[in-house]
Length: 367
Image 1: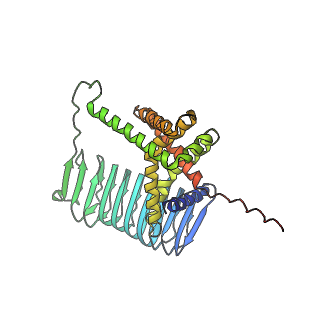
Image 2: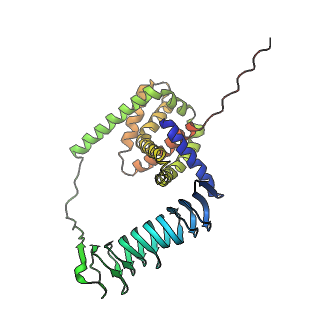
Image 3: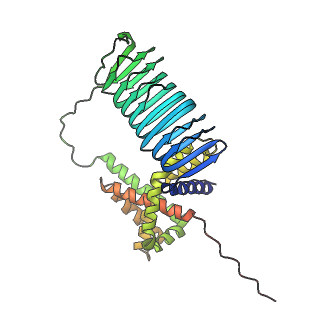
């Protein structure tokens, strides 16, 4: 069942990857999915709309939820939208009626004319000019010149509250500098929580290795060896085959793994918002995390079987696990090893999940 789940998820991802050169449009029960370099949507959508691309422009009139991800995202909807979930380098949102807005990225703007129930934004430069019941904003720079009927929460060190801003409830500000309040806001509405940077103590650097570090290193080595022995016992043929084909397939596996490393979590989280795909997305994310955790040890087993072909497979697997674990303890080298091993193992798994054609049965001998 797990193999079927991850196969379906990876198959969907590989299909989506093909959309970088040409647009992919999927319609299902009123829902629509767009994947292209430039997404321009002008036709109404009765259900949910998912758009992924470099430049995403939605002017389609969506009655369900909007999921938009890209470098430049512009959402303009004159109708009634359920929820808007957007992420990008530049995000501009203007919706006449929307239940909630969730956005993250670089420059994010909720323009005037937007009326929302809740607005929750985290970005670098955040601007809110619409109307909402409750608003939560976090960013390096936050500007508010709209209307908030309920509570306003801001976490930033650079806050601008224009003279047109109106807040009916409480204002909570978390930062290092207290913002200046316009005449439209009463001082009693504001709760300011100052964040102070802790001064660094001038302590001499500690030399040597702590006892805790030694204990954790020993635990890591023992755990790696146990995993190596267990996997060699259960799937020794897998590591033998990967070692035999390593020289001619390593480049291809690294490329497959790089694509999977980037795309799997993005698409899996996007599919979590659809009820039907939640089980597949959950299985894919769990298996993805497990593979990343075990990737260095699994790669060490393959390399050990490649370098030590005549050594007992259990001994070779243990040596590979120990060596790769020791190398993972080097501060900067561990990042390189983790990435390369993750790419290789993800690529190998994806390649193994590719269906193979069975050879046709031999013709029966004629009597």
